[in-house]
Image (cartoon, rainbow, N blue to C red; front, side):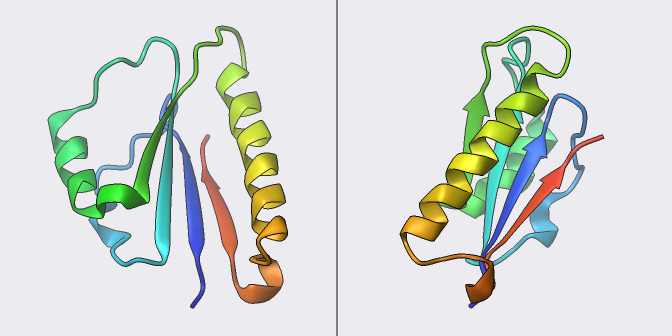
Length: 100
């Protein structure tokens, strides 16, 4: 089964409906900036059915593109982990970044 990791730059993009990403083959990583301490109720409600397949990653770094660099670093670590476990692009694993 193809596995898709979706990394969302929540500082710049807040997708209105995450319900389209239903299924065990989607894993969501929501990256938030240092000033984002709350989550809109509608977004939280659309993420709730995903359960453990959603991870919130809070960045404490300030500055231009700080969250972008954090996502890039995280993506590199994720690729390294996938390759170490034998799950890579050749097995259908994909990484999608949603940002501006």
